[in-house]
Image (cartoon, rainbow, N blue to C red; front, side, top):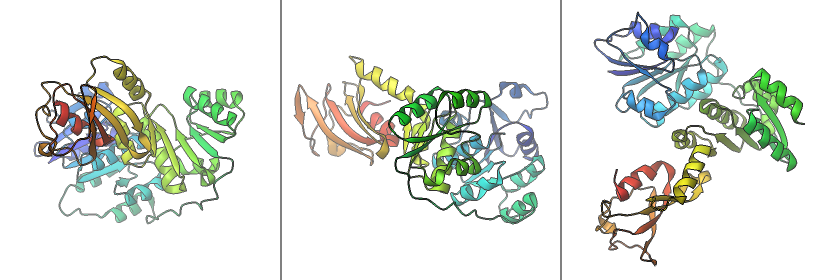
Length: 383
């Protein structure tokens, strides 16, 4: 079996020790490079330094075709994001995420993510899940870990949306601060949630709105902030995993109709939208698109970004090396989630039909779902 272990701390170390690393192909991912040089590390285990919430890091670890992934870091938001990526993007059949707040477990189990609030003593339980007939089922193990049976929490009653609008902003740094100020100036009621005490002290003195010190992905904190009546939930912290989980908790447990997340790594945008975030905003993607649009010889240009529907209006400029050049549309394998809207050739617009041929220097206008854009690009332009 190919097994990926994310986190090489106390629990991750114990899990690796319980695995038969000569029989299984084991890869360990950890952000701390110093752990890669441990004297007691297993020579049969491949160690990879990196942040596992980046899909490229998971891909390098062999997630495509992996049999199991255990997310065992000390940050439960990281564990939950990695586990969901493993399920949604890489279709890994066996995925487990360790969390430390038992109240989060039922909601994510209901979404297909196996979770467990474990200590180092639970390493053997994790490894046991790889067998065809695990000796203990999840419910029994959960009961032993917590002293009572697992219970599905009852979501708080959804109140009538506020009028005027009520927005919760998670993250009181510069982005959250200026966003809250702009919302207040537009008569939107705002509450800021900030986990860092120093930032909390600063922002609470500088802005005239309620400010809460706490974890914006915590059910208790969101309840205190009045998420039951929130119209718009915006997570703009510096960590993609925290923004994702906060938006998911707001939507799943409080029924917030609109969630918006700041994304630092643009590779995570499609994943976060697939996992339920309504709108993602990546300054990196915005700046990159703006620069590419100004390049005179750019082969790709984003015309319109429709994030709410996960759609993009894209232009592709063909050249003689493009695999589409010289071929008819009916012979092309265009991705299902994309449409060829028009072709501009020598200043003239062409409405494409099945027998329409592509030519070098054509500018092809397409409407494409964001996750399908890389496949469409390869079809038209090649690698």
